Image (cartoon, helix red, strand yellow):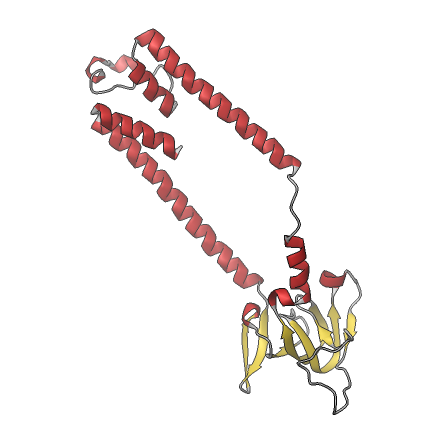
Amino acid sequence: MFELLIVASVIYFFLGDIGWGVILAASAFTTVLIAIVQESRTERVLEALRDLASPRALVVRDGVSRRIPGREVVRGDIVVVSEGDRVPADTLLLSSSDLAVDESLLTGESLPVEKQPEVRLPTEPGPTHPPATNTSKLFAATLAVRGHAVAEVFATGVQSEIGKIGKTLGAIAPETSLLQLQVRRLVRTLAAIGIGLSILVLVLYVLLRGSWLDGLLGGVTRESPSRCHCSQRSFRSCSPSSW
């Protein structure tokens, strides 16, 4: 639509019909302005939804507890998880009290999983080295349904288990759905009809009025053949009954 309006505007300016040229140019730029405003509003709404959807994490940094967006959690942060909290990253339990976690989003298991810190010997590695068992790990996007715990982050983003799953799914090429095929077919059909009508307008103008310029303008702007698109040469010959 934008391209058609610009082409018609340029033709009118070339013919010297400044009025129609300005009107069509203003229509084209108004269309672009509306699209930009709508896209900007959509981006703001999506950003607000991302903030709402992003889990908030209670972390301890420099001895001070603060609640931050889950995406700002980094490796080595100490996270406090309570009942109803969404785990922001893959973490290793340091301490817990009657903790149970819903891991159905990650594993499909419908029942909550009991979690507790792993008992370590003094000579074993610290919490920055994840243990082999999953009972002392909390995974990103899982939900604490009971108890509370303190844990240390050891993996975030694509390095987390849920991130690895998302990365694998992102590598799968999506197939074209039946709805998309039908929409494409409909768009091609409507485009063919529009082009055919534009050509018909041009032919009728040339045959009935002998003016290929008016026919070209009528075809580009997709107006009805009964409407008079007048250039500066023919504008004075148009009567009100021709509109």
